[in-house]
Image (cartoon, rainbow, N blue to C red; front, side, top):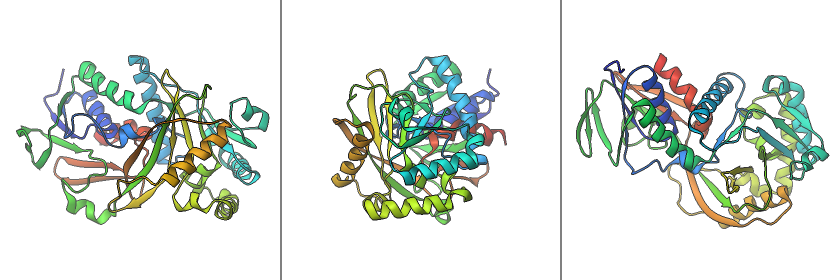
Length: 369
């Protein structure tokens, strides 16, 4: 039974769907407005990774842990494909291994990680000097899970979806849309990197830009990978490592090593993630980071080649590309932004590419306030 309170969610990506779920649980009558025929932004272009390791200590790691539990509840209820087999950060060099060792000493107990030796790494069908194993990560097929989550919210939680409808203006209780006037008592704006269509003046001071990623889908090379695979390059990217004072020296040494040996990896913000998804076992690999007010739609083949080479060296086998695409997400000075541009209107933007990891818990927190 609904409370009669009408909540409109704008955007059917993971952040919008998370808020629709949270609003339905408090008894609201929920409608999600999506201007495309289906979600087509960052939520379906990513690795399909619920990442706990990597989130900096404090609020973000707590949100990721809470969201992980909610994902598992969702998977238990729907039977949607997933793996809860953790992640493996593989050291490509002795320098990368020293970073992982320093992290384990400083924060291993907090994150539940442990170190693996070379033979244990080889047993995971990858090559490395050693590795850091985390049990917390969940793998999912992003394209599949967003579609299943949408249907589940409609069928099990009574959420209404209006696709191909753009909300052009909000003056509660009125919403002016591309298909006429609608009504709501509360609005949650979850429009991803689009911070120009609604309330642009409120977003302007935040310095939000766009980050473009180069991604690839590969045919199953004949292996089964349990954990999500990363390399020590990821320690230069994620806050759990970069914000840990005990790692300052080892990370500086690693950055110097990469700058001397493969400076293009730093220039293009490349760090490797290899995620095996679905029953067919395709690999999702990436990524790079190009940040700007506007990002060009053209992928750099040399960047794709660098990423593919990193994956082939990690797996020690040739890999066949099936698809290439560009992901885009909002990028800002902080990991997320929450604005209140008008009474009963909040805008939630995750500005660090971690929506799949924290959105569920973030939404419940925001709607409980």
